[in-house]
Length: 200
Image 1 (cartoon, rainbow, N blue to C red):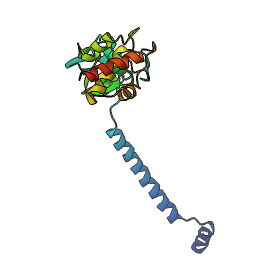
Image 2: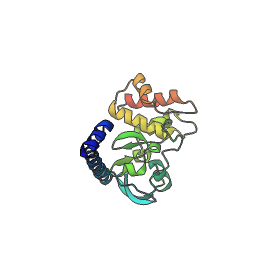
Image 3: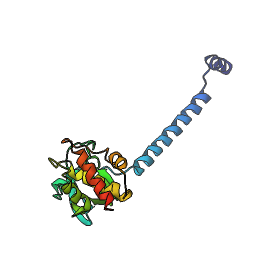
């Protein structure tokens, strides 16, 4: 009788020993997968829902603001801190109108979440005060409606901080990320050149 069972198992290509071997491997793989999933979940960043209170260092001072996970830095600056220099022209940052400095680098506040800016030093156009760039913009009539002006001022200041004696071509290239719908580009470039020549 046993011989008949063994012959039948050999014909089908399946036996009890193989079955138990396979079952053990499946159980072990399932256990390993569960442990790996738990480890990944424990290492993942915490998901925040609803409003939370955070501290933003803006223009040298710490400010408490309440933000949702999708609140942009631009919204926090404008609607909670009343710093309206950075403008809401384009949500993708293509206009450059919301340019601010984050840890010294020019970035568009409309493309950064407020939560991403925690622990960083943020500077807005308001921090420049009577900067030579702003004075040059006034002197060379480098604005019309003025909506793009703060973004251009920040871009020019950043460029001239890196290249104080920037050429006309370098200035034009450095301002590629900003748009002026009124078309005062020539005056903006002249303003930047005047600062470069004067050594800021």
